[in-house]
Image (cartoon, rainbow over all chains, first blue to last red; front, side, top):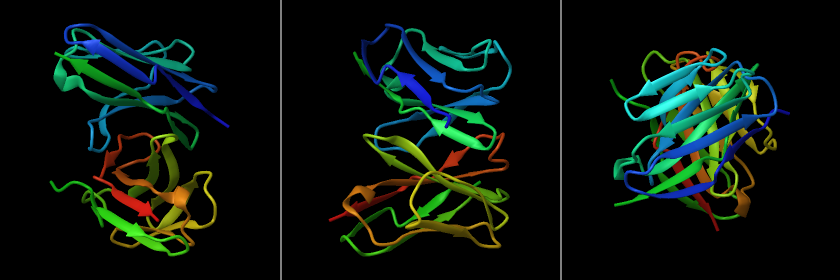
Length: 109
Length: 113
């Protein structure tokens, strides 16, 4: 079945450094979504990518969907302490929805 | 508008017991999906309901079941609890599960002793 792998599992950065998390699917995806979960909180929707090669930006966050629609990335420029949390990708293929295991980001001032 | 409401927020059960969790979706959302979140396995899809019908099901044993009522509220039940069922159970509602964003509730944290 479809699997979504997400790396790295953890990332510890100094405030101001950049951060990137990657998702790779074993199958072609119809769309991919990204969620953020703060410690002790619940996942909150960030964005959805649908088109091959799509790039979307939200302030310091840049999301990309690969040309083959099998991989995606989230890049944060100049991290801030408010970026702390776990970032999940969720890939859809048919009726299947599979979450990556997430990348936990720790930002130290 | 009100978000997704899950009850209870915390509960402790012993092995062999059963548990029922409740989820009230955002008004107007007819799709409700359930997920199990554990540190080792991440977020795993349990099932999804739309207009009282289960449309999709994840790879969990039959001890995990759910239902949806005519007002879109949903419940999930876990019977014959095992230690490994300890997890955060998250419910999410959406206008269209297959294409739209998911709005998650705060979750129900289950501890099985």
